[in-house]
Length: 223
Length: 312
Image (cartoon, each protein chain N blue to C red):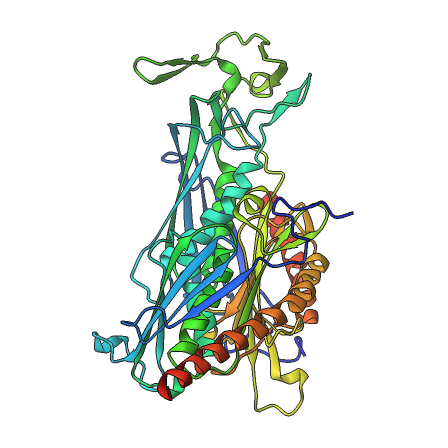
């Protein structure tokens, strides 16, 4: 039997999600992503010409992710690579797309929340994307696989984030493990199957968030 | 598929470069050191060479849930002999720090336990007051690809070569000056109790004052590149796996996968990192379930080979 989690959720339940698009008027795109008590804000500036000419690519856009509050540059590189592969960078040659991510409240599963906030901000900025990457954090406890762990749960056991393409368990775009997993490959594959089921909920939530934003804009324009 | 194609450097797709490890290369200047080299026999000039050195510092112990009395810490610093834009030093440093912290956390002393299990970390000197910190300095001498694997192996080999002072020869802490005193060599060791633990150090049998640590967790990495060829009509030939990619091949890969397995139990995966690469290929190449199983098989075989080299 699966033990009850401290916040009363079951093993496969995500925390309540909230997404506010366009919260920063100075940015070209912005989003405030909330998953329980984890709050992350992302701001997109661009596509604009880079300040240093050597930074530009002749045939595609360069994406730069900055997380000022994070001491790990691995997270920045991880998010940069995912977003570069998912965006249609060839549509914006010789430009730079700067994404700044601020962690406002830290309660576990930060990397997944940062990814979702960045993708939401890119959608708000109108950047064309090939696919929507969905990240799910899986905690590998002794008894079960727990999804979307809090900080307290992450301190006790190892976790890994699996990024899926099109919510398909057989299309793993990226993976990052925060600590020593000490698990077999079968357990990790089981994580991807569990994550795929839940990622469909995140994709559906994105659709609701975008639809409500577009509806609100239409009402404002035609009011 | 893996055995039928060859690369620009003459290797097969599933062929690793020759790995050589030299431990104790800086024995006069560091507590532990190792020089790792991934070299292709046909081209002697091109090789990935990493030098790692471990020095000891005494400082405050880190108290955790597993070690309430405290444990030693590890700090990794990476630098390159010459500027290389293909290496992200801060990302490499963070990756090594994350991996080695796990390895050191599980380290044990080479003791004869005559009583209950010793709960103290081998780097702990005085409970809650002083511990040995391991400072690992990594120098990238030459980069011909797969620097991450070489750097981690160099650090592991250097840690295995590291000798730490034996605690059983009498340690006292002068709290006023903050100095730690070890009893001189030849001290007549007496069997003593630490709380409810009675231990007997093997150093006394050999007449030494330093010993090496044992590592129940031995992280051994393998990096594999995945190249997706969209123009191929056959589905299986669209995906090509290249183990131990060279620096020229790394630029072309669609995805880079790094899997770290436990050398003592290669079926257990300690770390799994993969993400799309900044390759010339603009297409997205995701991993499938059977791809991950294949990578695990390759990692297991590579770990067994690396363990033979390390232990030899």
